[in-house]
Length: 87
Image (cartoon, rainbow, N blue to C red; front, side, top):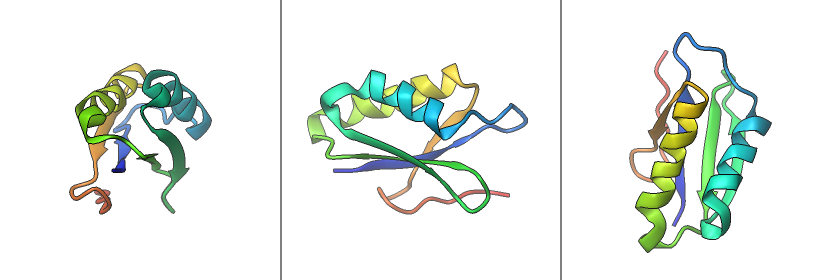
């Protein structure tokens, strides 16, 4: 399965995609393949490919933990693929 979503920085400084990707790779490890891109508005979009169902909650929590570290909120895609960005 894939886990996808985006980080909402609110009024905080946006962190580079490279920094986000490095932090996620360090935490997710072998539980999935991390990729980070940007929307056309510059919002960091995260996808973690190949996550086993047993690891889903742990990987989701790691995305939340990275969010806390970079002062952003991880908002998971509503159905595993649809990402809604407000604003």
